[in-house]
Length: 424
Image (cartoon, rainbow, N blue to C red; front, side):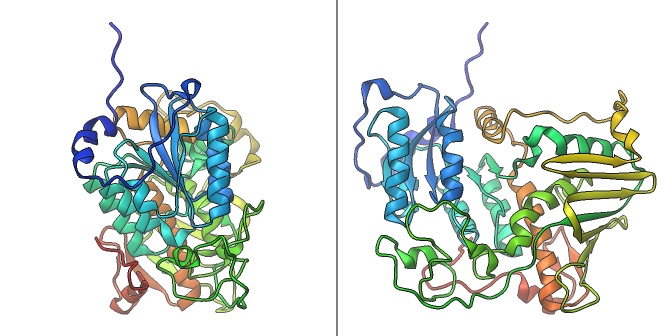
């Protein structure tokens, strides 16, 4: 007997949503040869800068998805994304939006892909969950520790199938999967220390004002961040081919420490079995001016140190495993040459991150990088940044998401601009 595919969230919610959602979009004109498969997941893409543009083909080339809407605060990028979608489907269906909240009112959209700057993620995640959409959100998942806790709560409260864009768990030849398996299997003995080589903590933005880009809604780009004049370093003009350097500044990002740290710290969390927990102690570097050397300590004594070669280096009582996107090696070398035993845990090899999310939505199950996975991994970055910014040793409670030292809890979040509050 052929099993019918599990219903999508759209099929559950469309009837009720259609009664309440305002008609805020233009009815698309569907070309005959561009019709979507009946069971395709309809998605909207929020944020069509370089990361959103790089993600777009992954969804366009997967028959399980149908991109029906795009959203960006830059009119040029927005129009370019619509053109790419329409050309792929040979249709004029794709609807462009300036305001993501209008996109979220559409009852025919099952899920959204969020690829905006980091300071926007939490607001958009919460709004998408409330609108009944499943979510794929780029890493780093949030800007603050409080936001990390909030997005877990929102996804759970609204039964959101949530995939964080930490694709090292599913891609890159499964090098990271293998490293995690061998660490978990005890092939390097008890893990003593893990070194992660990524960039530095961010600093406050000090860019000079520039003439405003005419196609950009700068107020919407800033969103909850403090008001400041436009500078093209933050939002490059038009359709650009590089990753913008808003990643360097505290108002918008956790810095280059979080940009790649969200990937590599994620692998550490996975290998240590800490996807639903985290470290308990924050240790700043001994030199207050140092840009490397901050450490976090887990309850079992394992130390996670910021610094070293690119990627993650696991050092145990019986050896070492190092893994990065282009390599995996061990000391002694024979560690990775020996097959895992029948009693060792074997992790699944996913085709890619988008297919993993698709399967999870159809089965209403949690994907590989569920919301808590992403929130706990970026929390590592946020704790590291706090170590550099404040230079104090602190005790962290990963269950309550609070510091034992009351004064440090003022650093859990920041004050957003009026009209962009994070209401939970």
